[in-house]
Length: 232
Image (cartoon, rainbow, N blue to C red):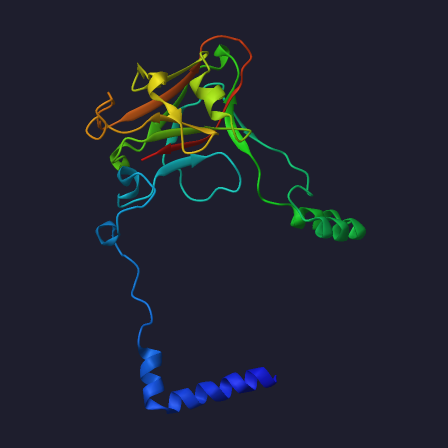
């Protein structure tokens, strides 16, 4: 109470003093950059990816997920959407778990449940057919396409790049895996780095429509589980 009274008194004295009023009204910091043109050059990120007027488009199969996906599924065939079924104590602190266990109340278990859960769209053999995504071509300014896998922090290389049983096409043309790399982390693969106008090694040009497809060729049992697809 004494502290609050002190703060209130000091604020009143500041407001009665003309010079103090002026200082309070003066902005202490300039406004942050409002547009891409106002921003400085990026220090670490590739300028091609970080100097555009909008964020990447994404479809995310993990929980929680908000907003409207950019890429959309055009043809799913027999690929299945999967979500990790965690128990109520997953990612919940030990003290909270002990507290709720003492209450032994199913309603509180549900309230306590952490929202985070892994997920993906998955298939493991050729009988599941082709999975086709329509990418938001009108919003793709750089040509960047990234796919991420589940589950594990280092699945990108084995699941996508080294998986000879997985065929990836863009507008019906098989993508060359030798031009792909692990990016931006070990669970993801960069399928296309950029359009041809930005990357002389690329053979992908800007088009009005982009259909990205995944097809399992043989029945060797290696599961492909896509958690994210990103386009820029």
